[in-house]
Length: 278
Image (cartoon, rainbow, N blue to C red; front, side):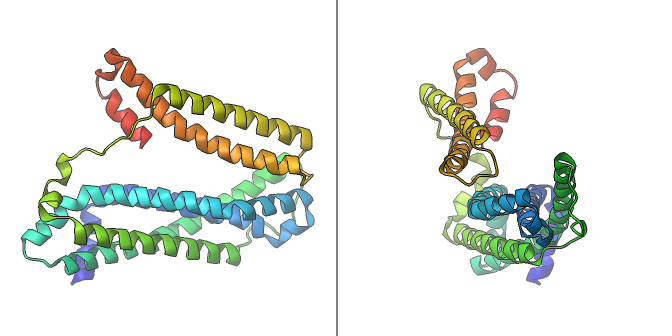
């Protein structure tokens, strides 16, 4: 009964679930594709791909953390839109434990489908990336095209099973702890936006651009083939600079528009910018 109800909910709320589904598919595809490039046996004889493989292995944990927060936010967005639905279930006499079972089945259903589609898309992306790389570097790697990476598949499954497990725990806690009146009135509450000051956001934005510029300067001076301290410094700087770039840019644009009142109050600009910031 729970499985039938969960499947019906996914089908009826297809538009809401599509945001969560597309986010997880994108994350799975990207994670598999880049790990597949690093793990191909055919790349072992090519120095440039060997270095690329070591780089990707080194940042896999960082990528997994970013994808964890991305999927968690998409799940939070979906859960927020469905809180009133959960409240109606409770009003009709359903126990909280039964609602939790339905959400767990829905998470498992969407998770399995996302893994299947994401891995297939990731396989296609990995082949396309390697074809583009071979064309740019004017080299051929015999036997690569068509290869499927079992190790990348195992990594992807482990990482996203953990992510989906944490997502299920978050959903359980939200349903069990939220009061019925809060569930029924959830659609009336706006999401809180913690805005940073405009000078602080601007300072972070400038600092991030400087970090990225210095990183690429060091990389050009050192080259990609030499694993020296300069290469390590450029890697750290470009990662930190990119993180600060997007962190500051979202708050900077939103705060800047708020300071321009005629633009702030015009149409749906502020609503659109808040969604972009999120």
